[in-house]
Image 1 (tube, helix red, strand yellow):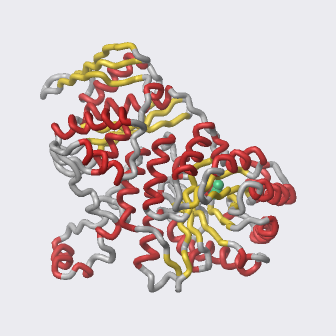
Image 2 (cartoon, rainbow, N blue to C red):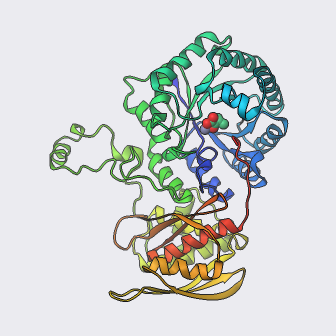
Length: 511
Ligand code: KIV
Ligand code: ZN
């Protein structure tokens, strides 16, 4: 019997800290349901003290998820911990994850606390958290640059206070595998009570070593890995869940652990997260990149055709490729539509929403005769937008682009409920569309990113556009999907403006 490797997914918390990756409650719920379907052990659903929206999102996830533990992050202070505790109260299995920084630079410059004060605060935090649940995790932020003697001291103290999981984050992605593995090994050897807790690792990817460091730590005794779908996360991201799970599975001969994750749900999860956050997956990304199983060179193709294992160490279908089977078409009825949404774990808020989504599905099926799961996901993303979230809405558009002529866009928008027309020319039709919108919005934003992806294959596929805008240090991503990529671009731009307009503010736990 191998040890279980606990997969702790933090896409909805650390992943959400990526610039512009903020998600709505409905979006978080959809991702949480997919994570549950994938059988991850722990879902870190958010940082409940960040805002009321975050609190409500964690609470909804706690209410609906039954098979995974639902966790909220909390700084080591009473207010954060009480918010976290209240938000996970409805969970079938709930965890509070509290943290405080332990490196000399963080304690002195950020916290302005002495090491003694930090230990005292950490112990108090565990006590507050245990009023809500026995499942308490403690993290020593910036453990990767902390002194080992101090880590031993604080971990001994929080274990005595009742922490059940001890997490050793490499917060700034500074460690290298052998050194990090040594740290974990030393802690397990030296900390009294270390055999009563689960040792956990949380690695950032600043040097591209997050997965290697996490796996080295597993070899040294860690039994929980904190990771995110597609490696999403602050700066260069976190360790990517799909790489951890598949490394452990594919090299079962090397790793002394196994995970309960259903790997066939990996690609659907990757697509969902990418679609909701607007963070595209690079084509050569391991496991979930579009080219991860594509054999280009003739020699490789020949080898794979003769005997698959000549060049393939995993099977595409085992991680959920090809799962985007043709699901529906023009003649599919309302029941087929509803049951496919059910299978994807999508609950429409009401019959009225379902009817509206079905009408839009029929419109799409007129333009595109094969409708895949990804098309449905994009369609319901639009459906979850409420009128309050949509200050700007695209009502109609007309674009003109002809060789030798200046491209032009005419757009009709609803702005706070009032119909408004705008037009502009531009260097291309997308540029013209954005400029036309700006004649009305006058947002003063900077365009940081514009990207187009085909949601599925085929020239009739929907184009999915991501637009990243920045204003006064605030960054938002907008998404739009349509079979016409200029329309998708205009929708994405308006979606980003709506996010800026909503003025949501939330705390970053680490700032
Ligand atoms: O990177 C980090 O240190 C964190 C902690 C809050 C666990 O995300
Ligand atoms: Zn982190």
